Length: 193
Image (cartoon, rainbow, N blue to C red):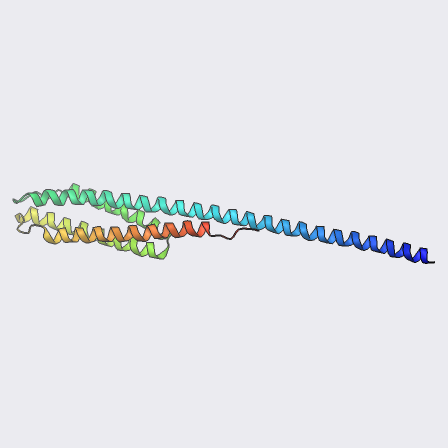
């Protein structure tokens, strides 16, 4: 009878060992699958952050290029008018071309505003507003130059131009910080262990 009890205990021990081994193997497999899922999610998040940063950077660059094109044309007109002291005929086509370049920069600004974040959207709107004001001021300066020549040396317009430069530099700082934040966020995603 002892042999039967020993056989039963031995069989039960073997069964329990096999069950325990299967349980541990299943848990290990589940843990491995969970780790694999976390790793894939992490990789997807990093890729998304990279994509987000590239989109933002492209939008910011297109905006700055459009703003720069409008500003250069506007500055060129102002400098030409400022250099002359006698009445200069109003160049409506040139003023319209500057306005179109401003509108291009405004459209590019909308893309930047959509891409965000809020701090960049605010800085974008401030820069667009500053450029709009500067374009309007140069147009009024051109109209005054056409009417009676200019007694004003353009000092107030020069100051407005300096304010525009300060606003552009503020935008650059905010945009750089936003791009760095996206890059840092992508690098600091938790790893799957």
